[in-house]
Length: 258
Image (cartoon, rainbow, N blue to C red; front, side, top):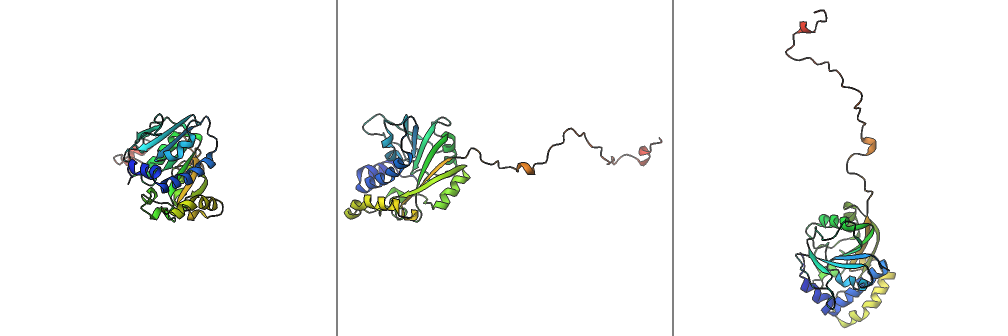
């Protein structure tokens, strides 16, 4: 099920817990990608809170929002960079995106493999994508107070297996949101310290979200027989003569003396 775009906007831009979650995930994205000058950057789902640092730096920044969720003008203070689209048909050219991030997109979509196929189409050969999904073992997937409590959570093994099925290579992984999904002042004040500590020493399973970086597998093995198992076609050896005789032919018709 897709959450409404207004619910997502209110969480990330109008609540202290949402702003803390936004910063925790966004810092991981910026640290991973670094300089994006001259690159085309896109986000799908509700990934616009993660794209703001790239405005004015990247060549192009696009926020793709699925139709069941709805779309909003983003950023609020400038020209619009967001567009409404179908989850399996994006208004982007082939091999046109250098950096792509998904948040609140994969775990709520109806056809995950169709969505990943569309990602494969638009991602450049040397491009990279970050998949942000709720962690099955984390606290955030168990709470309805945040958008990460909706949809299908994933374990690290499950998300990596899904990426392999879609012909992607998992090049790196990390976690974020090591503080509990609570609006209490104590936890909000401790959020930055807990994120730094979790990023350095905390195991991935304690994070609220999993972040997997993937690349295209353009050299994926064909799904048919291996080359060694394909017998060569002997098209130049002629057609063998069959020893079978028609059922209506009489035995004397085969006598060579006649």
